[in-house]
Length: 311
Image (cartoon, rainbow, N blue to C red):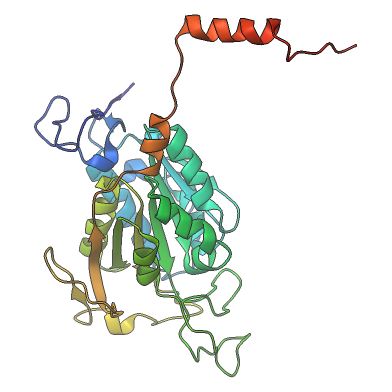
């Protein structure tokens, strides 16, 4: 195998064969023995998003970050739901699951719980995550499952050709709201903070440096990570984040105070705290009895009173 495992100790344990501390979020996850490049994470599938879609930039950045982290490809899993962003697993040369609408966090929870040797990612959109999948999202965050959730927010339902999503602004004119939407939008950052996510960040699709920093932080964090990614939809909601591009955004720096009401032009990491991960604690409760004890219990069941005969 062309991989070596990360140590299973604390975050400051040195990795095998070197002096680099092992990030807590990657404890037990094998790393590649040979150097990886972005192309190693690109699948042989034709990338089929609309020309100019922000997903292209996110895909390239994600491939580069995973290569830099040297995570073994066969120990990386991406789970998606339904939507334009959910084609993501097809374009990554890792294990992937294109799951049900809004249910990606549930599958990712099961994977993280049963396989601590995997780096588990969820790719979802504002409609998939915050509408039909809202309940699954907040409970994955509340439980602090060791998964990394990337929420592509283009403020529109793109796959179904342009209806208002849970993050569309009030007054949004679409085919189904010709007089303007009267819904009040969700703020994904406020929602994640309120649900108790231990790592919360926001980035812009075209800001590769900021997006790389947010993705790397999510991978290295142990517990539930949510990264909201402002993603432009050039077909059905073009220019939605034009005001944030260039010099239009403010980047949070370590030590900066996060305002009570997060403005939309504020990017960076809003929370990164340590807390027990749900899957770590759940696995710690599972005890495998020794062989002699297992055989004794089996005999007790076979010879006990709680048996029946099938004619």
